Image (cartoon, rainbow, N blue to C red; front, top):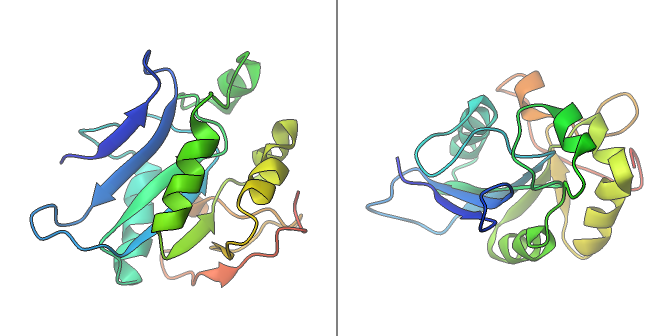
Amino acid sequence: MDNACVFSPDRVHRYSLIHRFDPLFGGDRFMLWIGLNPSTADERQLDPTLTRIAGFCRREGMDGFHMGNLFGLRTPYPKEMMAAPDPVGPGNDAALLEAARTCEKVVAAWGTIGAYQDRAAAVVKLLAGFDLWCVGTTKEGHPRHPLYVKATQPLVRWEPNVGL
């Protein structure tokens, strides 16, 4: 496995991860998924969330996916992310915009904690003009995290004025 990743120089923040299903034959059909924050995935391995995302993307006929996040800080623990002095990271917004421009769909997938520091609202503004999708919403209207939905859940349009 060889995922293309963009990290901060100290590797504390991961701004993007690109996973191709068939690196040899390529293809240019990608979806951007925007999660809460990166966990353990890197150039050599996918974590459970990205494995689930890969399944959704294969089902949709994609050649791979771009993974971005509201917060770029790498940790499997949201409490650590929320305690960090700079959980977003200086390169995060630019990476999200660049990926959105090259992908067929942008999928919001950050769950309820995306409201922390009003970050979900900031990213929705950043991506104004792009249609946003999700794999369902929480009862408060936040886009659901992909680990917590059935693999058969269809992508649906997400109305970003809800759940922010």
